[in-house]
Length: 379
Image (spheres, rainbow, N blue to C red):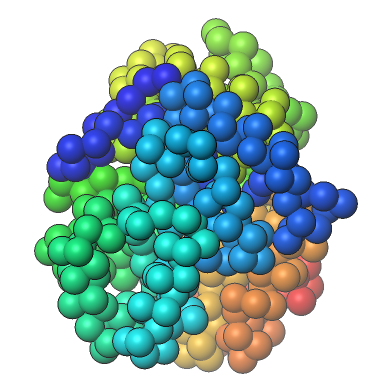
C-alpha cells in the first residue's frame, strides 16, 4: 500500500480508503448487509494496508455504522482511522448534536472518532449549524478527546464551498465529489486546490462517478479513446490513477461491493503515486473525457451567464441532469434526480421563451429548444 500526505495533519492515509455505503447486500435489500462477506472484505483491505474506514449515520438505512463497529473488533479498530458523519438534515437544535454523536459512539463501539464530518454541507445546513453554535460543541468534543479531527463533506455550488471553507479557521479536512468528469462540479478542481492551499486534507468521494467510469464496455467512442493508450488498464484504474496523480488529493474513497473490486482497487493503489502518470497517460484521460462529453446533447459549460432566469428556471442544473442521463444511458435515474432536485416551478416547462438567456449565452446555445428537449426526456 502507498501512503499520502493529508494537509497539515500528522497522519499518512492509505491511498485507498474503504467507503461503507455500498457493502454487499442480501437479496438486493439495502438494509440487509451480507455481514460475513463485508467482514471478509473490510478486514482483508485493512490487512493489506488500508487505514481509513468511512461510514455515516444513514448508510444502508442505518445498518452500516453498527456493522462497522462489529467488524473493527478483534484488534482492527486500533489499525485504522475511523470516519463518520453528523446527519445534518436531522439536526434541528443543539441538543441533537449530543444525541446523534453519542449514539454513533455506541453503534461503532468506540470512545472516539478519528475523523468526524458535518455531513452533506450545503448553504442551508451551514446556516443551521452556525445558528446552533456547532463549533462550540465540536471543540468541546475535541478537548475531551472524543473527536480527533473535524471536517465536512460537501454537496452544493463552489461559492458555498468557499464560504464554508473560510467560515471556520480550524477545519482539518474536507470530503468532496471529484473525478475526471466532475472537475467543475460542486467544489471541483478549484475547491480541491483551495483546500490544499489552506493545509486542509482532501478526501475524494465518487471517484468513479457512481460506477459510471468503471464500465468495462463503455460507448464505442469512449472505448476507442482508451484503445489508443499505452497501458492496458481497466476504465476504473484510469479514473483512480488520474486522482492519485494529483498531490492535492489526500485519499480516494471507494465504496466496494465485492471482493473482486477490493482486490482490483488494492492492486491499483499499489501502483499509485503523485505525478506518476506520463504526459501520454494524462492525455489519454483528456481524450476519454472529451469522448464522454461528446455524447452530451447540450454543450453547456455551466458558466451561469444565463442566470438568474426571469422565470426562475434552473437552466444549467437542468442541462447537467439531462446531459448525465443521456451520456450514461440512465434516463430513469435522470427523471428521479430531475423530480427531486429541481422544484416543479423551476423546471424546464416554466420557460416563457423570453430569450434573455440566449442573448447572454457565450456558447450561443439555443437554450429554449434544449429546455424543451430536456423536459420531454426528464419530465
